[in-house]
Length: 300
Image 1 (cartoon, rainbow, N blue to C red):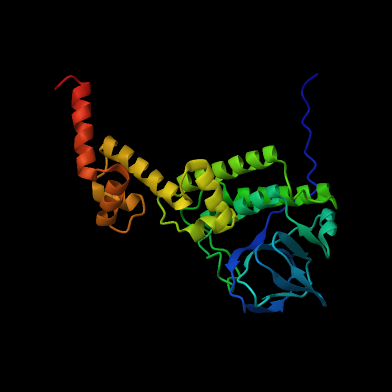
Image 2: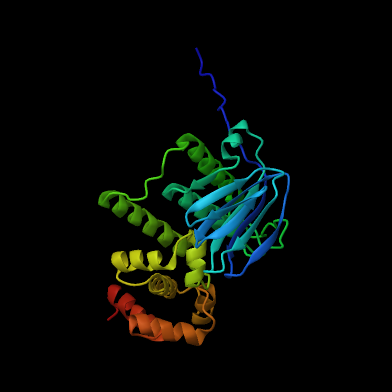
């Protein structure tokens, strides 16, 4: 008897998205409101905001997210006390499982935040539309979009929603044990390190890193200092220099090209940073490598 394929039962499927936003609002921000025929969730990554859903206004606290069902009027405004950071994603989903989210305010788990960070990261890799443009009503694909980025967005969103439905009304554990906390920090560090490696050619700021990984600045710096001995930007700078040393050893690019490929503003800034980290200029390092290479071949 031959093998028989089993078609997977997909209880929740997302094929279309309308927007992926990461906003850093001022304390006086207010959006007049809208309604549309697709789903949307709003997540408070930092601070608090007032959110209107239908005729009810709710205070959305840090770590909470609210879902707006199709056709529901909604708006958002800052509290006037602090400057909130907000994630907003809108999408189509006709699954009956979405009934779970109607009128709900949920606390995001660690895994939910990881998946949202993945969505924001992949949106930046897939679309040229700025994530912080409140007027953007359509997504424009990048010509150099990362392979499979759009599919990763859909899979991440599906996984997050499925996890929430499966979790139901069970409370999210907010005080993990030290062992779980340690593992969580290690996983977080590994994820951000991989993100930095993948974006080594960019001129990232600390705000960029926090936004793309959905993490607060203080926690990011705390984990990096505990695990690496320095801040995230210091780690990123050292990562660039290690890559520069590799490229110098390979000899396929001159110093100006290396500086451009690694996102430096100029060859002069690259040279100063290289010397600060290594104690040598790029030229001195190149010469030292050549000497070591000749020695390795027995020429000296």
